[in-house]
Amino acid sequence: MKQQIASSALFRALAAACLLTAAASAHAATNWTASYGGCGDSGNVVAASGSFGTCGGSGVDVRGSSVIGGSVTDATVKAWSGGLGVQNQNESNTNGPHALDNYGGLDALIFKFTESVSLTGLTLGWNGSDNSTSHYNDSDVSIYAWTGASATPTSYASSVAGWVLIGDYFNVGTKTGNTQAVATPVFSSYWLVSAYGSSTGSSTDAFKVLSLAGTYCGALCAPPGGDVPEPGSLALMAMGAFGLMAARRRQKNQAI
Image (cartoon, rainbow, N blue to C red; front, side, top):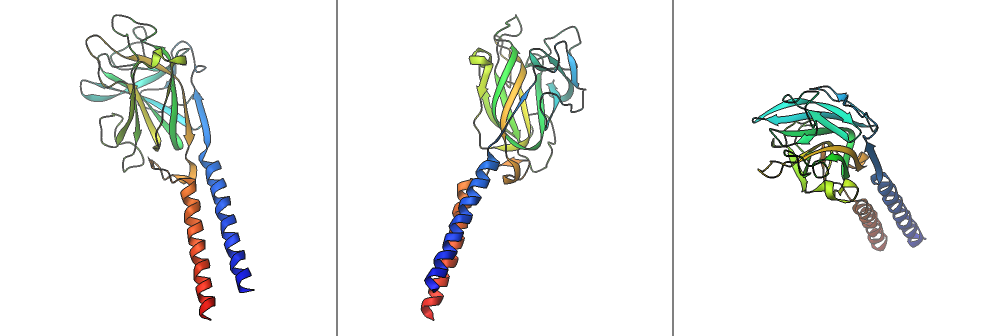
């Protein structure tokens, strides 16, 4: 009878662990896409300078910034048919290209999510590789995630401590569908997409962001970001705990 009770308890433990694995896996695999192609085609303002705005996907706001002469400045986020771009303080409504570029400064878009997410892909619209001029002729992209101690970034400049470089992606505008896959274990509520860190005399990057894709972290992560516990490891922890309880019960029965 005692062996049957112990076996029954172990069976329930294994069943609970399996349910935990299934639930965690389902929660970790929530995918999303934010598309900005329909936000406007003639420079519609999505976010005023110094503010977050929203368009293209629920649960994500966007803000513009630009580093000019070593100083971080706010920028206006605008939408065209070719995607989201920024208009910094050195640009007007008539001179452009109102893209994320590194000509005379370094432009960026900051994406703020209601939950921790991990980016899995980025698609460009208008870009310097497809629309080469004397100033803009490339489409290199840098992506950062906020992993600082504070819940919100202390600065919207990628050089500030707390922003971690996820990757530099080169010539994205020449890739199939202008799409770049992103692979990272990092989850965060704040992501920064910018032109590559610096331009050269022969190459200057410029592009607009057409869409983003990623995975929600949900309850498995503590914002603003960091490593995500694997569902399998959670199950193994549960199985180990219940197995230890069963082993102790058997030892107690043998002693009796």
